[in-house]
Image 1 (cartoon, helix red, strand yellow):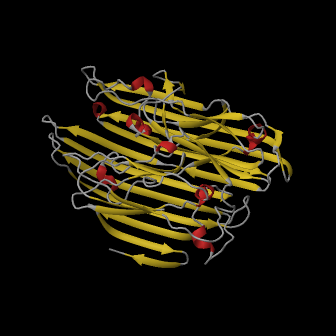
Image 2 (cartoon, rainbow, N blue to C red):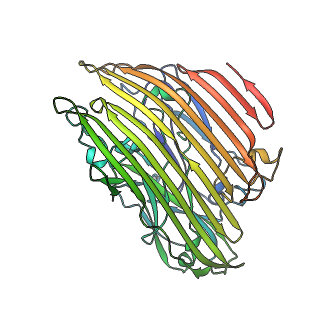
Length: 514
């Protein structure tokens, strides 16, 4: 898919979601426009959804916008598809034979099929074909409202700490867990990447280099092959997506919450690979090793001489492991199917300046592995983030924002991934033997913003540098080689203008500077 947009004027960033029928296939967002106008293009590989494209579909691209006397940016959009004739492959395997949506299923009415959590119970009841040999669940979530900046929310006990000055903070802590449940049993988790959209924190942090994943939200893969002996029994089964944060005692302990603030937009889907018609998958579902996360929590508040709250400091660390081993019998015999995850989180946070300053030193690290007959998949990742931002209101109501933002994404994928790894672009000319990929990117930006009380205009300036590298891994899954650099880019911008741009592709550098 090629999504090209032209816009000028004033506008907020907007969310775009594409569906084929009831199945979400892409979640994106928009750049915030400038008075002189901007244009951007995003290419989205739809190969994982090949089975949907083989059938007649209702295509829904939902891109809501508000245009009035103040917000004048009209999004002029073009969405096109390009089809290629040839062997289709995602990672080391063919695309799934069937995809089951876990959505609200309103596509037949031309409506997006997402659940809104916690306002809705995000549950679908479905039945599987009986001849499945592999199943992978993917979940797509996007926080809005009080959950858009969930990573900077405060502990639940502290939401009213700065009520007299700043007002109420959003709560349930700056940690979130997306839980996938099958018939009420935990089957895996996803700790979301802290996506910051083009209006986030300070708009000029993202001009013209947008936040990581802002134009293409990556979905977490959760292998549910170990559940096939249950799911292939011919009966209907429920799949639930639930999001939780933390509740705390205000001093030294915290536990999982049962809900979050409003609102999360949530969908899921299940990718299925099938044996021959008439085959029936069976086996024994093992006991999942889940339990509760290990949570460490501390919090303190300082006050000024008049008794007003001045600062809030908190320290949160969470770790979680999950695994399940089952015996699965398919057309090709009996084997062990395993899914395991290990995750850790830390955030040292401070709210200062009577609530008008917010600082987070944040990191998520994780790893996951799937093993089944003929299938291996593993991933490891980290999401570091540092953000320090302030808001200042003059007595007459003028607003000044300032922020420094450091954010990274480090991702390694080995084996039979559901979604494209990026290696296909290099297989023909260099080596078709890559078993995995390594993606590392980091961006540093500072920005300020000014808006008068009457909201008649806004102005600001930002400075951003982003470094991106992509490498291939050869060798077996257990002992991959050192990464082979395939693509590298180092780009800087100041005041809406690209100032430096270095690109290296495979073994030969191609350099651009401006």
